[in-house]
Amino acid sequence: MLNLIRNEWMKIFRRPGTYVMIAILLLIVSITGAFMKYQENRTDQNHDEDWKTILVQENEALKSQLESSPIKVEQDYYKKQIAINEYRIEHDIPFREKYNGWSFVKDSSELILLAGLFTIIVSAGIVASEFSWGTIKLLLIRPINRSKILISKYLTVLLFALLLVGSLFVYSAILGTILFGLPEQAIPYLNYFDGKVTEQPMFIYLINYYGLASIEMIMMATMAFMISSVFRNSSLAIGLSLTLMFMGSQLTALLSMKFTWAKYILFANTNLMQYFEGAPLVEGMTLTFSTIMILLYFVIFQFLAFYVFNKRDVAA
Image 1 (cartoon, helix red, strand yellow):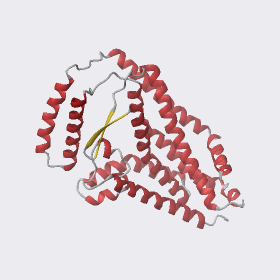
Image 2 (cartoon, one colour):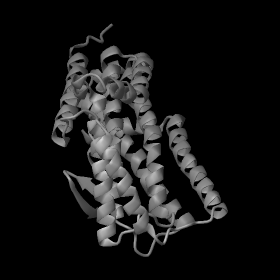
Image 3 (cartoon, rainbow, N blue to C red):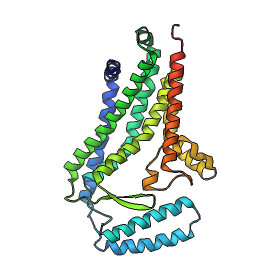
Image 4 (cartoon, helix red, strand yellow):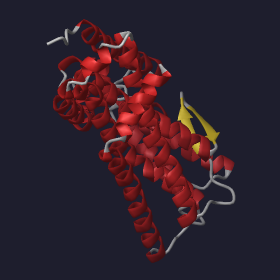
């Protein structure tokens, strides 16, 4: 199995496009960092000394909005903000600090979407390209189980995704530290879950955030891998996966406003951060429910990919 994965890894890095994708990702991080540094130099950093008064006033406004809002999602959001503000006041934790390296790492997480796009491109072509180039016959004449071949390809996709996300995190952390420095004592992230507020070290929070933010990327790559295996068409896999990646969440959000069954759609569940930094898309959704739905879709995608790949006749 390790030899198969090594072989697939070498195939990916024989393509110049792979290095271009990694270079684009790091270049955009660099440009973003330079822009943020330029803005920091031009902007007078104003830190409110009387921040507790500001939070008290904000809570009064939020409580008024909470009482008048008929929408459950908005009510949950207001409750969360009120609880966090009260915790800050009680434990003397200001809500603003000077922009630093950790802030830059958090902002750079937006580029996970770009990493997902590159992963989908690799995932969509890793099987389909074997058919289009005719090299699939060379693979299947070996005394190796077809399932092992497909597993090695999928694991290679996951490793590539890990490489991109890991590179994004490490590079943004290094660049952010160089440009903005690290605070002597970073303000902890306040995590709100199940009605309780808890403190979390910023580094641990960012690791968790990057991991949870990568779930949608992994599921879209898995879908592209399935389409590539079933239809042997990388263009179809890329096009459909990217369309759903950019539009799936928005369409699901619109459906959730009128239909409760929207919670069973994949895109209603891939954003697990909604349980920590917001409110569930549909009333009644829980972290356990979303995890089960993600696993269910994952199994369906893998079943279709492996079933069709193992049954397909490639002799012609």
